[in-house]
Each structure stands twice: as C-alpha cells, then as structure tokens.
Image 1 (cartoon, rainbow, N blue to C red):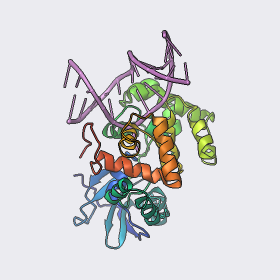
Image 2: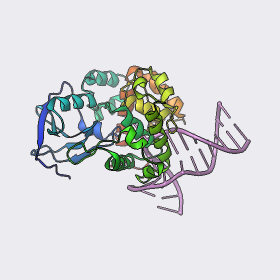
Image 3: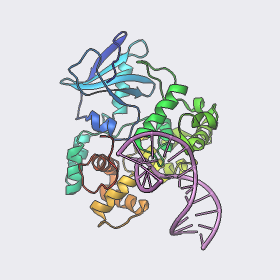
Image 4: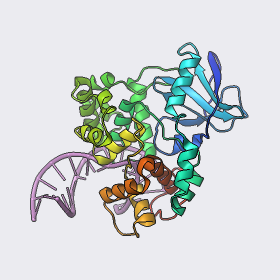
Length: 309
DNA sequence: GTCCAGGATCGGA
DNA sequence: TCCGATCATGGA
C-alpha cells in the first residue's frame, strides 16, 4: 500500500451530516481515480483512499469525528478543499431518506441498500465524467482506471501528493489520436479525440447541458460519437447529478431481468424504462445499489467473471 | 485459445 | 427498424 509523504501536508475534518461509505462510493465503479493507501500520520485509519477531486489531490478516511482529508496546503486552502469534497461526495443528498424509501420498495432493493448503505452518487466534473465514460464502452472498471491514470500522467497538470489532474479539454484536443492510442484507449481513441474537439470548439457546451432537462441533455450528449444511451446516462448521473436517470449496462440489464422482469431476455431500453418506472426520482441511487451489490455478490444472479475483489 | 468487460457504430437485410 | 460483426485491451 502506498505511503503519502507528510511534508507540507495538512489535514482537516469534515463533520458528516449523514453516513458515507467510502468503499462503496469510491470502489463501486462510478469513479476511476481512487486507490487504497495509508493516511499520512494516522496508521490507525485502515481504510484510506488517495485520489483527485477536480484539480486537487487528497487522501480521504473516516474517523470518529467525521471525514478526515489530507491535502497539500501550498496548493489549496482548507475551505476550498472542504467545499470540493462536500460537493464531490454529494454530502447534501439526504441519503438516509433515499435509503429508507428504497428499502421499503421491495426485498431485492432492501438487500442491495443494506449491502451498500452509505454509498453516495458522486458529483464529478462533467468533462471528466464524459471522457471517462467514453472510455468505459466494452471495457472493465480496472482497465478504465488504468487508461484514466495514463491520460492524467501524460497530459494532466500536477495537483499535489504526486498526482496529476485529469487532462483539460484543451490538453486532449491539442493532442493527436495516435497519442491517445498510446494511453491504451484502444478503439475509443477517436471517440475521445472527437469529443475533446467538439467541446473545445464549442460545438458541445457542457455548461448548458447542465441546465437542460434530462431527455434534452441526453439528446445533446449523444450527438458526440462514442456516446450512446448508456454513456450519456452515466454522464448525467455522475457528472450532472441528475438522480432520475437509470444507466443500463450488462450488469444492470442482467439484474433487472433476474430480479424484476421474470428472467426473460430484456433489451437495455426495456430495462431502463422499468427502472425509471419503479424507482422514479431515486432511479440513480437504485441503479448504483443494484450495480454495486450485483458486482460484489450480495445479490444472486451473477453468471459472469468475478469482479476485482 | 476463449470469453467477457459500466457499448457504440456501421452495413446489410 | 433490426441484427450481427467489429472495434483494442487485459484479466480470468
């Protein structure tokens, strides 16, 4: 496990208004930048994570007082870090209410929520979410993380703690498709490249997408090559915090079929409509609990290779 | 060697 | 409109 040097590192504590499950939140596959590590100066904190929030590298862990955050005080103020972390982890979401409402819906959801209680839908930077989920097509979570690391290492700005931020739109748009391929993007290199150019040119305005209703925002995002229904929904959920969308990947399609649709073969579109019909404004949280508990074996019905744990 | 992964695109029926 | 092949890459 990686050590984080202590020189210049400051820590602060954020009181938690509601439960936060760091493992579920950071390892469920919605974000790709976090690695287990030791918390600087606190060997008693066994479950710490090092990663990047926007343009700030931090180490996160929980203790009795709340969420401890280590950061490089020469780069960012305590207040800025606290604000960034609170937004990133969506600390204003009324998760206890969400979870009690989901648990009351059906036994499958009750079990899923019990397994991943405290999971937060993160609020990533929309551009980082868009780029990351373009890379997610027909890919695995560990491999997506590897590609994101490669891109950040090569084209991102240093952001403290020895890490680099995810590359800006301009940083990628000014490269070549071949250079992106060298980061192991695979066949997605041209999608990522096209996307960076469209955003850089102003052909797609990521700020205005956030002001649209979800169906319009979805249509807008799918104008980008490499962005289909599933990727668009993930960007809306994890980048824009639109909690009423229901992204359907192979895991969710399987889970919806097995648990809610009689085990018959269902199209992603059917699974999506059923998820939205059942879970409505909580569709996003319901989906992420289903995904997390399906992948990590709290729910039966998985018939594919095991996850990373 | 084969199959799968937080899918999307394309050409042909 | 629908369906199958195809797209890099790495792990099981």
